[in-house]
Structures are given as structure tokens and as C-alpha cells.
Length: 178
Image (cartoon, rainbow, N blue to C red):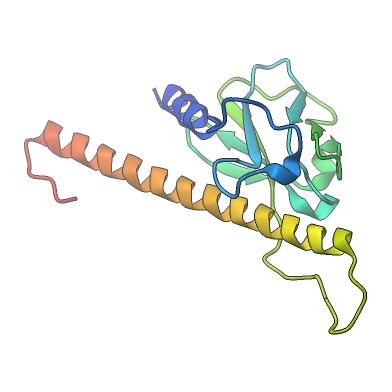
């Protein structure tokens, strides 16, 4: 059943490498923290929580996935509302703003997307402002977490497609080339 397989994929994706909650997001390791959360639709829930920093309104992406067809739709910001922007403890996304709640067979993913730019400008012989340096370092960690999550997703998708190819080949009695 494609919906069950989609749910299994989401469960693997939402796992965390940490056994204890972090008290300060600035102590996050570069890898092992996924700045995304995925929830399954149930026809009732319209508020979806996230527990990571989204630094500004341009750094959030909300996706709806049809778990049967695996079609992913990026929602425009006018279709949802978000709280917790700039809050290191996270917030919530309300979707939809009107109409029926997200149905079973669909999932909603909230992810932090930061640009791969270096916006901190430190001038030679200029003043030292630790908060400016910390903000620049925090951005680098967020970028690294984003890359790590994207690479993991690509590897998982490749492995899943190879396993599917092996299963299809085994069923047909042919030889598999992986």
C-alpha cells in the first residue's frame, strides 16, 4: 500500500539521533538534527508544531505530500499562518486557513530553508561584536544541518529505488544490476 510505505518513509525521516532534548539550540551539532518535521493528515488537525528555529519568514517552507502518488506541493505563504518566527523553541503552522483539515493519505512538512550566503561583514580593525559573530556561526550551522538533511534524503531515496528494483527483478526471475 503506497500510503503505508509513505508513512514508513516519514517515520524514518522524523527520527532523531538525540536521546535528550537540547536546552539551547546554539549547541546543536551540525549533523543529526533535522530542521524539518512531517505530520500525517487525519482530517481533523489544522495546527502543526515545530521545535526548531526559523530565523525569518523567508526561511520557512511548507509542503503537502500526497502519500499515494508521492506528489509534493509547496504551499504559498497565503495558504497557512505561522507562529514562532525567530523563536529558538519553534512554533506552529496552521493549515489550511479555511476549509477542510488535511485528510488521511496526505502529510504536511515544515522545514527551515536558509540561503547559502555569508551575510556577516567583519571589517579589519573594526569593533568586535560577539553577537554578530555568533549569528554568522549560527547561520553556518543551520546551512550545514540543511545540507546534511538533504543529502540523507537523497541517499534514502536512492536506496529505496534500488531496493524496489531488486524486488521487481526478483519477482520477474531476472538478474539485478545495482
